[in-house]
Amino acid sequence: MKLWRRLMPLLVLLLAAACSGPNAGLPVTATLPPPTGTRPPTATRPATATVLPSATIPPTATAAPAVPTAPPVVDTTSTPDVAEAGAAGWQPMATLPVDFVYALSWAAGDQQLLFADELGVWAVGRDGSGRVQLFTAPSQDERYEISPAGVLAQLLNQSVAQLYYLSSGQPAQALTVGPAIGLALSPDGRTLAAASAERIAATLFDTVGDRPQRTLNGFETAAPIYSIRFSDDGQTLIWLARGTVQLMDVASGQPGPRFEHEDFVGALALARDGGTLATASYGTVNDNFGPVVTLWDTAGGPAISLPQAQPVISLAFAPDGQLLALGMADGTVQLLDVATQQVVAVLNGDGSSMNFLAFSADGQLLAAAGQALTLWQRP
Image 1 (cartoon, one colour):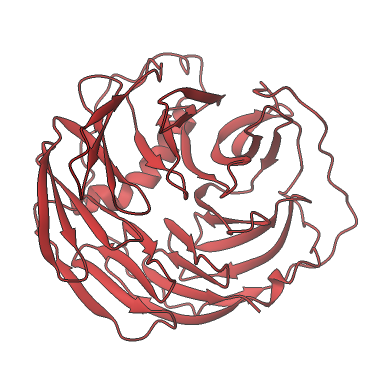
Image 2 (cartoon, one colour; image 1 turned 60 degrees about the horizontal axis):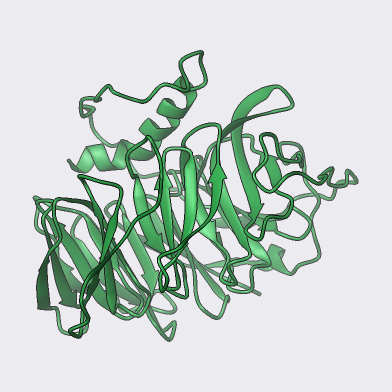
């Protein structure tokens, strides 16, 4: 189970490549067996920030339809420009050994970083010090959601969501949610969404009061739901199924913009103002099939495709929406200036796949997790 979860990003990428053939449009029916083997040793390369040399090639993006088949292209596979955005001065602040992180969130107030690994749930101070274990993980289950408000949700046997308050480590309540394939917690910890394993629907539960539960549906896809998540303000639910991403207003339950991709979507992020959606997938650009990051205007404006030299595993917007962090398969983090679509800095991590990224609410810190967790500080 644990090794399977570690290799999931790689399997998604392999599935994406396989879907580029003549049968790419067919539904996936095969079930892959869990891989065997052992995890490679953690790399010891120190974390450093690399400033990229200037280039004179301007972006080549042009206008495209709201949901384009081939969005405009900005070539980021060559040496990009270095924008004067102050991003080049990011410095590593602390590096912590972890046992495969699979949940990451800044606590409200930015004074603590919360993360879950195979040993449990932990909190560290803003500077990476004072590591404290808040919750011990049972060996049989590793699926958690962490809210910035300090609420932990654990999915047990696809049927029960056990809630905990991380401040005390004590159980809060247990909710019958199953059969469910995944959970999502609103940022304030007051709402739990459970994605049904039997139909395309998400049920919302009140975690602290007595509001009646309600069900959101209307997301139409032939593929199973891969995940649901809340936006940073908790007002939008983001649905993902294979190559389809759709936004939904939580209050009204009305489906919003829908974004189609040529292949599997491996990572996504919604800007805090809700105006830009970033997705990482595989696609064809200028007759070349490969990794691509797409910036979608959620109001229906032009979308921009950014071809990548390697797979992108995770994405995160800075709070002001001006920077987009790209967690790469080689363990680096690229910082992209959203306005110019230029990479302004590359942060060199531990050499392992960069699975999780999280900016602090003030935008001054970036947490990046692979086989180690590094805190980067903005200049």
